[in-house]
Length: 58
Image 1: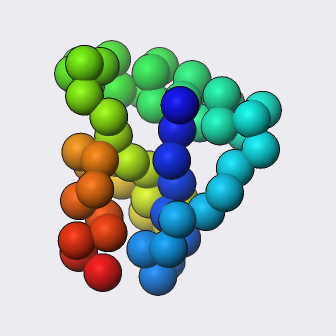
Image 2 (image 1 turned 30 degrees about the horizontal axis):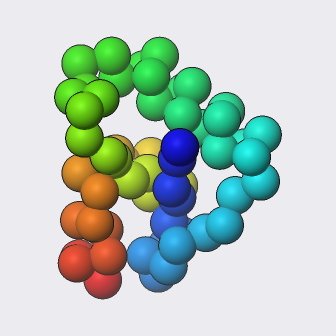
């Protein structure tokens, strides 16, 4: 599962195909992530952070 946020750090709903594509991109480009934990993607910056951190930064 992938979650994404816009510039205002608002959660962006993703169609399943996009969700899978984003998750695949993160898995390929960041293989060292701890996959036992969830992560969020900021589509505006390409930043990947532990789940919930983007919402707290808003």
